[in-house]
Length: 148
Image (cartoon, rainbow, N blue to C red; front, top):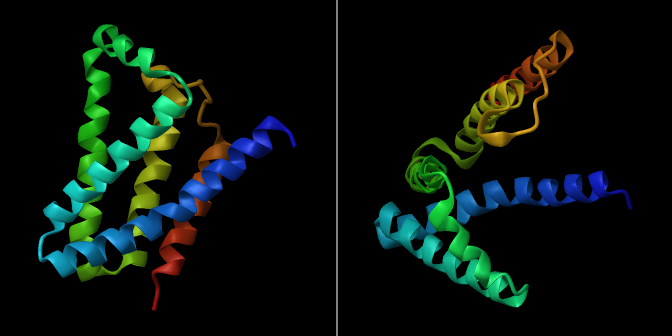
């Protein structure tokens, strides 16, 4: 299997996991009567899981590189916390589908900008007319799925 196919498969699975994560954490937040507490539990479980993987693959020494990494890159943690806390709060009120579809729309917009400008060290992939049309078509698809 070509590497690009493997990458696509991994990301497809990650994409499948996003609404599942949203549904499960929203349900936990509702049961606990605290979306923030559910978010904390999610991050504790995620931390322990990531730590186990880090140890299992023998890359614990890589943690020391954090000291020399550009500090603005740590803001990604704030973004993931914002996503988890907002989806955990919004999904029970707005619907998981609605919440995730708007997340998808935001991802399309930001991914196109990041790729176009090569932000944060990303591979530059200019926003051609064809790519813009594809993003627009995907955005239209997200819109259509929300019509009742």
